[in-house]
Image (cartoon, rainbow, N blue to C red; front, side, top):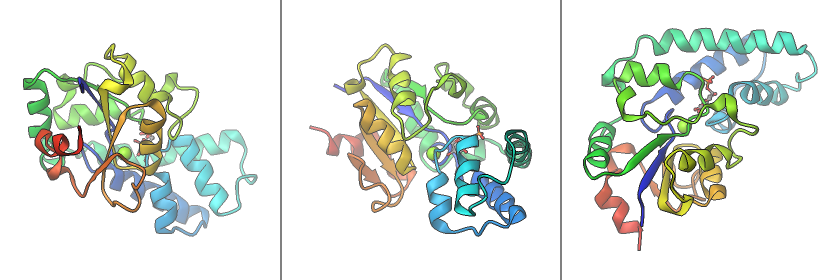
Length: 218
Ligand code: BG6
Ligand code: MG
């Protein structure tokens, strides 16, 4: 039986995936790296430094910068991203997600957060959702980022649940792979082709309800 839900944040609870994408796109432009939709999609769920490496590799520039310079570039992107986050309000919660979280809480399900983002507590604060997620996997504690299962394994551990008792929610292919690797049920939100590995896919957040999820479980 399902007892817990392990949530991704960016692109699942709120549309920060767009803000991350815009900030990386700007950085890629400034470095002379051609931006493509594939590059953008591939960055979803990927940690800050891994994202920078993917962008540099796409432009065959991974050897053009020292580690210190790379950290400076990542910090620059983060400054731009955080400026956008600080404009957010509870109105930036994706459609249906607040009602879904309230329903889960009312029915006694346990919640944890498995976001790769070091800005997750800040984003939750802007959305007014801090109280919903006392249990957050610290991305700084991870040996490997998504698609490695580690973050979802830890998300279940925080709830003292077996992975098989948990549903993981993701908008990114790398995240779905991580959920599957952890042995949880994967719920993808977005394009069914991109998220084909998920146990169930919903086109958008407004379709994510316990009733719809139940139709996919037996
Ligand atoms: C993930 C996003 O949730 O967090 C990625 O999908 C982002 O786009 C990653 O790069 C790391 O975020 P941050 O805020 O620590 O740079
Ligand atoms: Mg995401």
